[in-house]
Image (cartoon, rainbow, N blue to C red):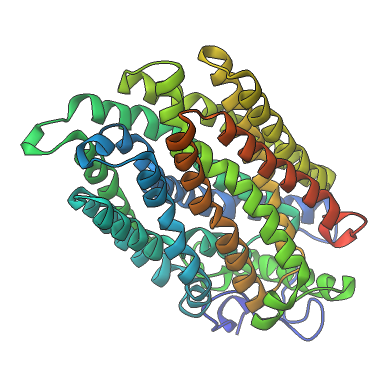
Length: 469
């Protein structure tokens, strides 16, 4: 039986007792040039098969998570909510996310991507649509909490899913291509949300913010149905790969596991993920990134309304600029990290640039074009640094530890998604200004930058061998 069909596990691949055992040789003869060309073609095939589809799914996930920032411009007045109530509701999503994310990622490992990610997408699309039934603080909080519960398994599940296909030499670029959906969701959702708010009030007796949740929730349900048929769990089950191609992928993944063990400090069991101090430090770094990230996502429309324009359509257009610039910078930034094998400074400099931008915003009380430039710099720094960040835990975690560790880092870090919008809302209610909130975000990003340098200093396992450009 070929290696393609010998793996009966639902996720991942079956390690062999000896490096390379059980794997067919790559075609192309003994020349390293021919083997390299074949390997490059295989990874290109996998990339184009998986990343564009996951990219679209991640856009839908992020839109349904953060479109509350646009809905706020009308919803807050309709429901009589203060900025603090809005901030709690926006952030309580991450409480549900935190509580259920680790078991959700363990379930993905057991059930496989197709049978787990598809139903998750259907569920969050339905819950997002149900936000139209919010009538006050309590119902708003409940719906946001439930949305966090049903969506929590998606992003860490996809990051874990990529470890079934790509080695650490290729992961930063693959993740950058995927995570660029994060800012691009802002590029697309901003103008669409602005147009909905500007034109849909009163249609069929619904307010425009209600139409926003319906029109942006239904695509997630449809994509979830498609996912049930499109994704496969790992290379051994991919009918679109021939035996030589799947064997190559499985061999490279096995070689990486052997290399991790040789380097030491690789963690494999579920318990290992929670015992590792490095995992907890990485949680803290990601927490700092998410303070800035969700501070921007949930409050950018309000910042633009305060400093640039009151027109919902123009707010949508202007909001696309920071995220569009981020999408343009992320992939070359991550590619440079892959080519050089350098990780720590790529993470730290991104966080540092965002800290500088937030700090200048707070100091100068920037408005108009200056404010837009600074929030753009902040978004670019966050997205570039965060993209490379996800290569760090994968370099020390394997197997069940990778599933749990990635989910745990994402869960703890995303608690900032609760704290950040709540703090900003409370500060705005108390001071009537964003200045102090900008300093809080600057401090969080500076802390993430410094900590990223500290915990990776002199540690070879956090570096990758340079990849073929």
